[in-house]
Amino acid sequence: MNLDPQGLFRDHSDSDDEFELEKEKDPSKEMVVYLIDASPKMFDLVGNDEDKSQTYFHAAISSISQSLKTQIIGKSSDEVAICFFNTKEKKNLQDLNGVFVFNVNDREFLDQPTAKLIKEFSCIEGTFMSNIGSQYGIIPGSRENSLYSALWVAQALLRKGSPKYVSKRILVFTNEDNPFGNITGAAKTDMIRTTVQRAYDAQEMGISIEILPLSIPNEPFNVSHFYADLIGLEGDEVAQFLPSAVERLEDMTDQLTKRIFKKRIVRTISFSIAEGINIEVNTYALIRPALPGSVTWLDSVTNLSLKAERSFICADTGALVHEPPKRFHPYKNENVKFSVDELSEIKRISNGHLCLLGFKPLDLLKDYHNLKPSTFIFPTDEGWK
Image (cartoon, rainbow, N blue to C red):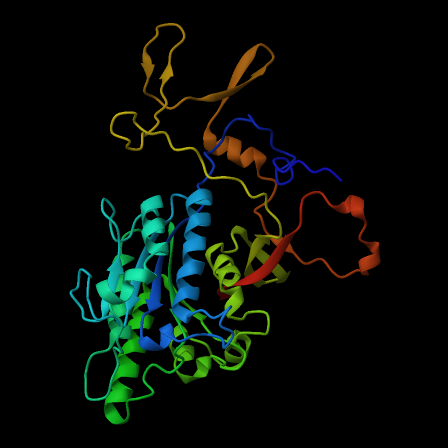
């Protein structure tokens, strides 16, 4: 069966040029900070087979490199930053020890990925020890906490942009499930408390923190040691988070791809279960056409991005029209004018609520009853109303 990817998700009640009510909203922009553990444990070999042996550090670098290559093609407007922690050298705006923000010339710490960034990052393993270095940032007898510092640096990088319009995330790559395991007593308790509080502060700013554990079947990553508290997992969520058999180290690239390409919410609607009982639900598209990113026009001299502007010119006088254009529809030799709000109200059949009328057997649902591609419905965190 041949399907038109452009028409598959188009509302049948709308035509391509019908009134042009509102500009299509751009997809939500994303800002991602990759936090990579650079402790000596990350440079251990994964397997015993010499032909297939690789380090945990190599697995993280290669998966991020592949993700950046995909990202720069499909979503070039998103911004990324790459940050190592547990390093000997330091490079960050806060001048914190054990944290190194990797970057290239002519680029801010948090900026759109470039070909030069991807090229140099892909080859960083050869010069990492000599230029950046590796060390354990959390050791007994020291108050240094490299994980706390890394979260602080990442949070500072993600300060720009409103969470309402920008999705902000921190992805942590590590094979150490208990970073405070070598510390005991009050020092350990205090470090865990301050680190978890730093993560909570970031989440209150609209920043989500995700852990991508680097583990193999013989060495499971036990998230309950520490990271469950860091990302707020409770009860059954801890068991569900633990890497399954299909999410092993060799599948790290696929895991990262799934994390980067988040499920986009089609719309949020109110689901009326009974009179006076409503819940907010999000609808997610089960399938979407994968389209390349939009074309960016560049100045031929400066190579900077150009901003497109549109102006309306009066057909009679040739002067620029500064007032917003008005829509009309001819009716009996007369042009009936409509405002944008009136046109929106005309197209709105209902308030967008989903009402539960009852239940029927599944076999009564026929193929020809389908009017649009189906969407997956899941309750939001807004709760009951």
